[in-house]
Amino acid sequence: VSLGSIVAGMLDNKLGNYTHVAKIFPFVSLLCFAIILFFRFNARYFEEIGMLVYFIFGFGLGGFVMAFQCVQENVADENLRPLASSFVLTVSYIFVGFIEQPVVGAVLSNIKTTTGTLSHSPYLLDFSDHDNFYRYAIALSFVLFMLLLAVIGSFFFKSEKKIHAPEK
Image (cartoon, rainbow, N blue to C red; front, side):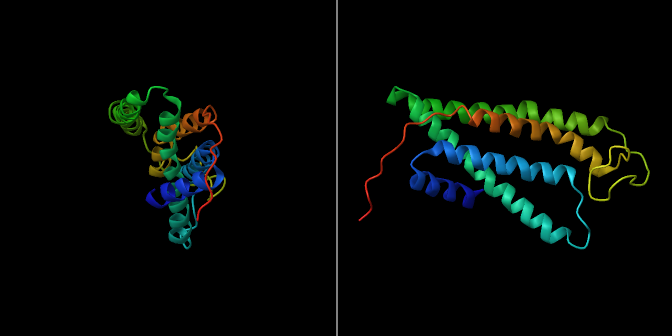
């Protein structure tokens, strides 16, 4: 996440428009999280593939800092900008703590496991086999849905093109 936010900031400076970065990075994290939830990796290559997918996922999450740039640029009163950023941060933490985590926990505890064999593909989530992989994938689908809403929300960001002075 740290490296992703640094690169997102550098790309923002290079492109002169944070909205492009704010659209691409969350989309990358959404794709990676979907891969994490719904694909089973071969045990032989699990560490290599998993580490790469998790790294790209975290890297993509670094682009979410552009939401604060959106708040800073779209609040007209300069005195309200710090309050607006704090409000966005507080609401997001409250949402995660009071809504998202209990929903995931409730779904996780209400899905019963069943024994069975994989009937279709050993690489995709099999909805007929209710093992722990299935339970976590279904429960964390709520987080995937929230990431999807964040990606959709990023398309509503608007920004004036910044003109940067050439570096000396």
